[in-house]
Image (cartoon, rainbow, N blue to C red; front, side, top):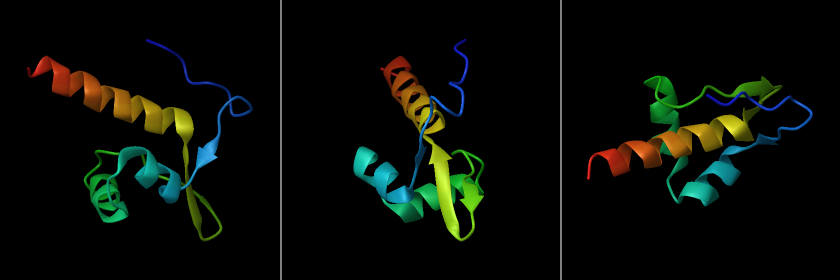
Length: 70
């Protein structure tokens, strides 16, 4: 198991970054958050941000799970 990078080594990304990275819609991600299947955002005032490392870990887990099914 790998450890999370420190906050100084990590970045905070927004939903625009996540949707561009994946090609999926923000509505889909907010449903996943509601269902507990995607990391909850950190709020900075009215802005929501995610740790890039958590988004990458979630994406890698999805890739790994889809390849195990084949």
